[in-house]
Image: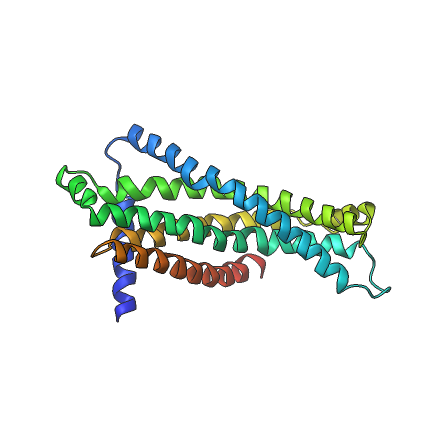
Length: 246
């Protein structure tokens, strides 16, 4: 029953979030600011993690396909499909749930306990829409770009690791990237990214918006935001994979 209570409360909050904005230009400025805070500031960590994960995937694939019956271009193919189908969407989303989700929950939680949200309500402003909607729009718009960056950087990191260590030639790796490529896989991963972006921002906002107590509860809400966002992401990963690839 407690879970149903929170699910219902979450959907009530989302109804307030997507209510008609009072002034569109203010929301536009807020959205641009959130794109900077939630999107552009996340490029660095996405690039670093994607580079090393691409390298690790390449090396592990190489060491597990040492059988001479396996052509060496399978290393590039395995790196490409692993990054496009799963890593650049799901794994990056889980990483962003920790970075972005905790940031959103702590920001809104601090505003709640310091009564800034109450002040907005007293002025007749829809605080849920004003504070949360720009975050959702910014993530939904910018996270697909982060995914594309992750794909390019991850595959490049795999190529660099493979050629530097000598486990695969540059020619074979590039041939593996091109072999039997299915463009729909990129569409599939971008669709998942949009859903994951919405989950991260909305679930984290819910936990921050309804904080009760003081600074200790703000910290706990940040932890809950990361945990529940990750769980919902993994659940929807299964659902979307079945719907989009079956």
